[in-house]
Length: 249
Image (cartoon, rainbow, N blue to C red; front, side, top):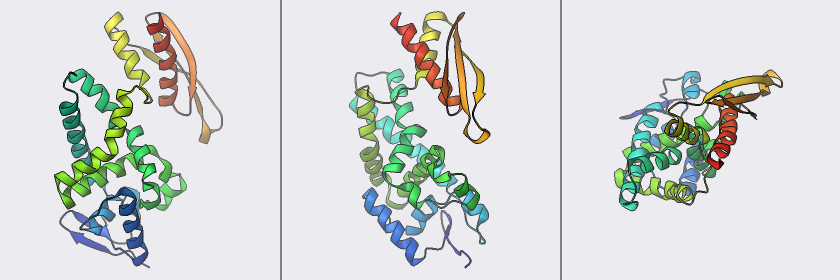
C-alpha cells in the first residue's frame, strides 16, 4: 500500500494510519506532552532514509533537527546562566557540551523509546539504525524543534528542562561519563602549550566488528594503547589513561 503524505506549513509528513496514530499517542504519553498536530510529531520521527525510500513525496526531519538544536542550546544555556551565578563562560561551555551531546540525547531518546517510533528505511533498519546514537540524538532534537513549533517556546522549555536538568545535575555532581579527550587537551594545552597526538596502532577482529587500538603521545611520552569499538572510543579510552596519570603526577 503506498504511503501518502500530508502537506502542512513545516513540510510533508507521512500519512498517519490508525495504528500509527496509536503509536504517536503512546509516545506522547511516555514523554508527558501533547501535540496539537500529530503530523508535526510524525514528521519529527521521519528519518532521511525513510523519506528517500517513500513512494510519495515525504520530507525528512532534518529541518526540525536544526531548529531543535538551537532551542535545546538556548534553554540549557539560559538555565545554566540563571542557576549557576558563580560560574563563568568556560564552566558553562564544559557543562553544556556534555548535556547536549550525542551521548546524552541518545540516552534520553532510549528512555522515551524513540527507537520504537522512528521511521527509517529498510537499509537503515538492516544496519541497526534504531540503535545508532547519532540517529536517536538527531531525532530527539527534531522532536524539540517540532514541539517548539507546535506548542510554543514555554512548552518546549518545560520539556527540555524536565529531560535535561537531571543531566545537568549529574554533571555538577561529577557523576557523568567524562569527555577525557577534551579534559586531556585542555590540561596539555595549559601545562605544555601543545596538543596530544593520537595514533591507531592496529585494528583487530572481523570487518563488521573491528576493535581499534589507539595510543596517545604527550610531549615525548606515549600512553596506551587502549581499545574501543571504533577510533573515537579508542581515543577516549587512551585519553583517560593519559589524563589520570598526568593529573596524578
